[in-house]
Every structure is written in C-alpha cells, then in structure tokens.
Length: 181
Image 1 (cartoon, rainbow, N blue to C red):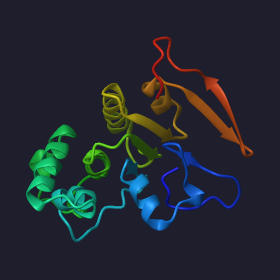
Image 2 (cartoon, rainbow, N blue to C red):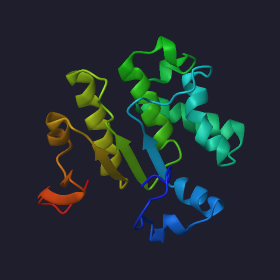
Image 3 (cartoon, rainbow, N blue to C red):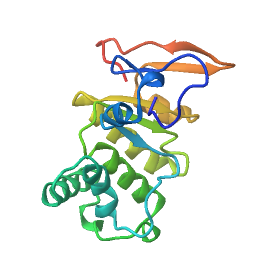
C-alpha cells in the first residue's frame, strides 16, 4: 500500500490510482500523501530527531524554515519537543517510535500506514502509540495498522480485517458511529 514495492500479481489501488501502473514520478506524488510508521523505526542514526522529521518535507520541497517549524510542531504533538536535538541512539524504543510517527504525520498525509508500530514496545508505550493513532484518525486521517497484538488492536477500536492464507475477512466491522480505522 505504501508503494515501496510493486505487486507481483494483481494491483493496489491508492487514492483511485493503480500503483502498479504508475511511473516513478507519479508514484512519488502518491507516496507524498502517505505517512509510513515502520516497526524498526528506520531513523537515520547520524541525524537528530528534528532532522529525521524534517526529511520528508525536505524531499517534498519545503523551505528549511517551514520544514523545521512543522517538524517541531510534530515532535511537540508526540511529546518529544524537548528531545529535538537527540540522536536516535540516545532515545528509548518508545521515543524512537514517536519520532517515527512525527515523521509520518509531519506532511499531514491523507493515509498513515503503520506496520507493527508497537512490536518493540512495552504495554504502556503501546497504549500511548494507539492513543496517538486514534487522535490522528479523529481529525480525518485514515489509519491502517498491521499488528499481531490483540490488546493494541482492541485499543484502536475500529474495523478489523484478519488476513490469512492470502485471504482477508472482516472480523469486526466499523464502529457504530460509522467511523473506520
């Protein structure tokens, strides 16, 4: 869904476009609307938290001053404004994941894709990450999470699709209010 790989068969439709048919430039434009949260963070070790969060804005062509302003706001939103100068190696696993989330949301994407966002975190940190993702959904961002953690899944309180043997089946529909996560 994130456009990192092309499907070997079939197609992936994102924002009404078949990503398997897009050229590299068109795919890059689609990916600018997607915030990715990786299980293993994918932070650049030689850059500060702020510089890691600025990166997608730099790629998208924002001015450095605007990118830093937005990155600082994203770090504040995830509770890490005071750690903007810290390198990833000096951050806890939960802090690194929150930097990853700040980087994913700094460009105000229409879609957040989170792959096992709590795989390396304790229960308390996982609950905080779930609450953050729910908050982003609450302001209109679509959030798709892949997880094996039932407690985390239940805290998200949204639509659940179980995938197994290549098939997807809905095991919990959207909430009664019509919200989908």
